[in-house]
Image (cartoon, rainbow, N blue to C red; front, side, top):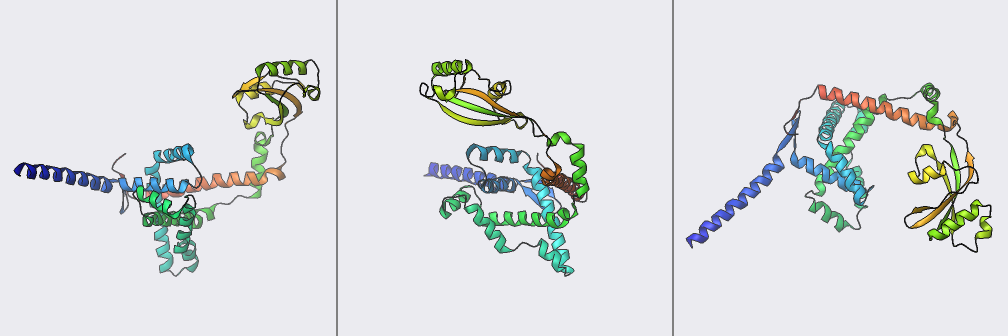
Length: 320
């Protein structure tokens, strides 16, 4: 009996130690941002929630790659997010105090919008129960998810209200960029190619030889079991495999290639036409240039704003 009590005491001691370790990990502070603490649990919860949201866009290995990409800079991202949420709440409180209805309208997050965003995430799952099971396995609740979404919406609102409103692109800036970067608007030479595919190497070699001697493809159709497809190739866009590109861009008009084996099939390429490169007119690309300049300015403004927030804030990273 005494031995049993000793073993029980040791077991309970180990269990309490394990629970204590888990609680310590959950509460372990890894960064302080003004009056807020960021813990290891915050880091892991954010990663899980981001994964749930990314499931709307990515699947399988692509999802894993995107999550891993985010993980690398997640602490810095959490610090910046916390700064933006704090600033959004400060501006909202100030607007409410000053009875600035327009600012309140632009900054506040309505509960129905949070619920709508949760419903969007649920659509990535086959059923409501599958969604609940997944977030439960991840160690987060729907309340955690809604809280994170509210913070995200606060950030979106403060960026729209405080940063995006400062970014403008004038028509003359679009024209100047277009004139200074002519190479960016060259279409590149395009090649129109006929692709003939066969299953047999011997037949592919024979067909290629006959075509090079001047025989017509339609006359050879009864002797060779092939399929024909059209291919438009632009070297500037990097759309082709290198082995195909090396063949296609060395062919002359009507020239026939030797067979190329790709995934168990044999392909013969015949160059049909070369469309010369041309410079796209401003009218055709001005919306693209506008978006590019707007995004560039927005990125600069965001960096400047975040730098200002960091300078006037207390930030301490306690664990890298």
